[in-house]
Each structure stands twice: as structure tokens, then as C-alpha cells.
Amino acid sequence: MEIADFLGLLHPAIAVIFVFPLIGTVVNFAWQTRQRRLQNLNAGKSKIPPVVGKEHKQLGDWLTSAVVGLTLVGLAYPIGKNIIKQELWNKANFQVIFILLMFVATIASLVLLYQAKQPLWRGVFATLTGAGLVILGCQDGVYRLTSEWYWSHYYIGITAALLMIFSLAIVQDIYKSHRWRIIHTILNCVALLLFIGQGLTGTRDLLQIPLSWQESYVYQCDYVNKTCLKPNTPAPK
Image (tube, rainbow, N blue to C red):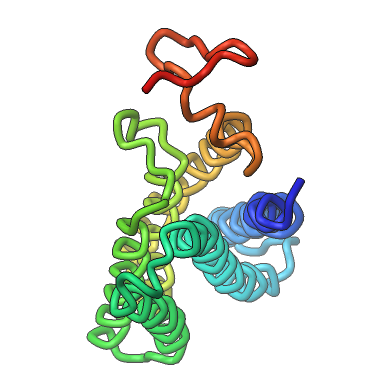
């Protein structure tokens, strides 16, 4: 494996080591928080400590940051690889500067989203953060698998990240309105299913994306007929 291939493993490694265990912890605290609320309504008192709600909120905030950060890492690798291979710095330096600014703007918008208190500004910064992810995802080099968008690691991941951003934007409202609490619960249940899909599609993509030294051969394969050139067979002109 070359250095580029090791860099390509950062995204799945961070997901396995940090993000997915964090998802499990957040789900566990969410379940305990709901059970405590129901027990207080039915029995008047719950044995589940009240701290679970606070810890669920804190870990949920960390999870949103982790998911957005992981998405940026996953996008940065193919975009950066394409910039280097196509030598875009010499051919289209404005495009490269724009991409770099989009990464900075997306991160800054997420930071400001955490600081925002008023609903208007939370909506603005949530929109800017989500827009940044979508714009970066449209850059050349990103493995989108648009022909199978319903089973695409990219589209599922972007959707999950957008749901987490929206969930963060409304988290202050769930303490004021039962409707927002229901919306928060539904969105995060959908996000959980998408994360499960990410585990499946991510594993599949690791099998489909070749190592750097294999690309010139593998990309000549006929994916429709599932055939590849035999060894020592010259490529068709």
C-alpha cells in the first residue's frame, strides 16, 4: 500500500474506532432518557438517574461534530486526490481556492451553529453547514455511485449528516415543544437506519475501490459484463 492508500483508510478507521461506538452510546442514553420520562409519567418516579438526559445531549452534540467531521474527511481524500492527479492548482487555481474556502466555511458554520441561540441564526448556520457538505460532495473525484443512489455510500452518508445537523439545530426546541421532541426522535431513528446502511455500503465500497497501483488495470474492466482483461493482454485502443 502506498501513502495515498493509507490516507484513504482514515475515513473508515475513524468511523469504526470512534463514530460507531459513539452512536451506540448515544442510542443507549436516548433509550434511557425516554424510559425515565415514561416511568415518571406512569409511576411518578424513575430509578434511572436524571443525569442520563444531560449526557445524552452532550454526547449527541459530539456525535454531530463527529459525523460532519467524518464526512469532511471522506470528501477531502477523493477531492484532494483528484486535485493532485489533474494538477488543478496549475490549471484551475480558483477552483482549488474555492474548495479550500468551502471546507473552512463549513467547519466555521458548524462551530457557529453550536454557539447560536436564536432560532433564526440556528437555521442559517445549519443551512450553511449542510450546503457546504453538498457543494463539496459535488466536486470531481468523489465516488458517488449516482446510478444506484438508493444504495450509495455517499448519498446515504450526506443524508445522515444533514439529519444530524438539523437535529442539532432544533435540539433547544425539544425542551419547549412536544412536537419538536417527536420530530427529533423520528429524525434520529431514520439517521440510525442510515448509519446501519453506511456500515454495509462502506464495506462494499472498500472492496470496489482499488489500490493506487491497481487503478490503471481495474478501471479498464467491463462492469456491465463483469469481465476484466487477462494478464499481459494489451488494453483496447
